[in-house]
Length: 373
Image (tube, rainbow, N blue to C red; front, side, top):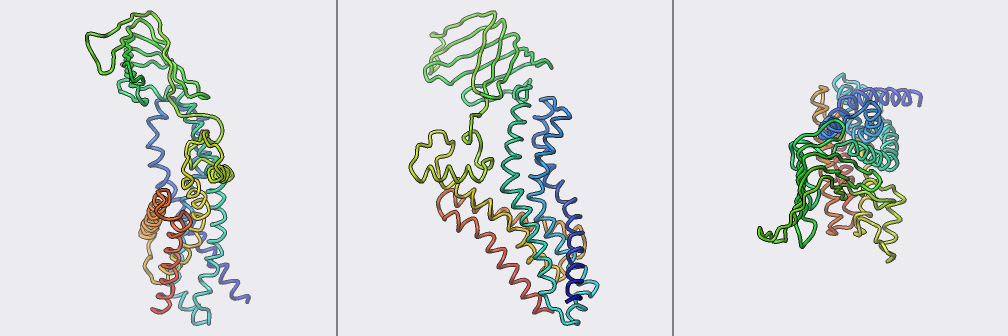
């Protein structure tokens, strides 16, 4: 018993070390593309140090929720592969310890990481995405919505600004408003300034020295009204915001809010305040919250089996293989979500199918690795 405990502790430490190394390598791979995708928005808005800290506080839990399974898969493959290459696995079997002595402690570590992933997915992910959404509103209120030299669409409205000052001053403003079915409005102004109300999401443009032109739709050049103005205030909803659960997207809702929305829809209660009326959207997200945390535990079987087969010996190859395997698993998971939301398969069956496939592959690989040895 003492020998078995010593070996188990040694295996856990070995896998944990490689998992930490994989986490350092995998986290930037996930973080950098998403960060650069919004870098332009941040730079235009004049991001401050406080904003950077707020983004980091929200981004780290989101990244860890996806990076942990990749890192653990990498750690399992590389640790077992190294032990096999050093003939330590052969020595364990010669001493009477089978594959269970390798799988059990690694699965225990996978279960611990699964609980940690569950905390990230169920508790922290909705909270962090809400905070990021609120931060985006703050950045937008400082001017991230208006960019110079670019046509920007806000639903049925189009805005173009020739130049923009640092103090929210605008020069050369053109607005095309097709929100009315009867008339199309065009506004031209020499200068102006803007402000955004984060609570209502309404953008307000205070324009100076310009013309307002109203044309019927379809446009008739002989039936156009033109009004000159020295000052004109133009306001419209630029951002989708609200109060309560209806303000957020599906992946920003807490578990209790998802269950409450699903209960209201299924019981026939009025749901006019909900953005999504399809109960499958909520049922699928609930199943997703519970299914994804099982990834580290399932990857334990796959990582051990690949390590026993000697597939991975180098760190770079191990990381690439871990990213490829997780990418395939997550791609299948995304496809399962789409199938469930379309109602082609029940959310329970669709969402848990990738986990069942991954478990079957891991067990089959372990059995095959034992046969080869």
